[in-house]
Amino acid sequence: MPKINGNEIRPGNVLEHDGHLWSAVKVEHVKPGKGGAFAQVELRNLRNGSKLNERFRSADKVERVRLEQKDQQFLYESDGKLVFMDTETYEQVELDAEILGERRPFLQDGMMVQIEYYEDEALNATLPQKVTCKVVETEPVVKGQTAANSFKPALLDNGVRITVPPFVGQDEDVVVNTETMEYSERA
Image (tube, rainbow, N blue to C red; front, side):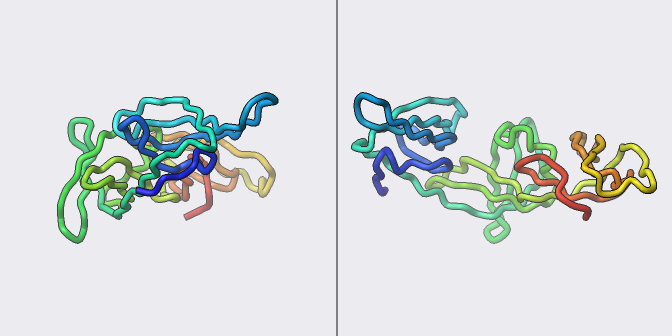
């Protein structure tokens, strides 16, 4: 595995530190008035989700880990586990439902999801950036109210509440950004 200097750590990097795999969540470069500069890094453990704040000086060497990414199909949820299938080998893998956090409602049957592997261990799942959902409840469309900078609340078919532009009506399909959990466009 390649070693990188402490000042080369970027958000999203996966590092091996103290015998565990960590994902860099936030990186802040600090240059105090006295002493050498360092990177203040917030790390999240990929296996158990715990967090750790660590300082890395530029002279510190850290192992950078490359994860293998595979697109896999979501099959079903059972006992708090999400089951995904490799569409080429038909092998199935289980991940905790908590791994998706607040984005869990956007996971749909048959959806292709990117699973990240370290050796043969599945560690993380990433949803597609945009997902189509149906608006099941919102205020009626008001004629003449167009591209004003106002939004109205809406309830989606997966139970998530978002805000939509005034021209979007009930039973319409909308595209939602799963990273920001906001309305993106009409479907």
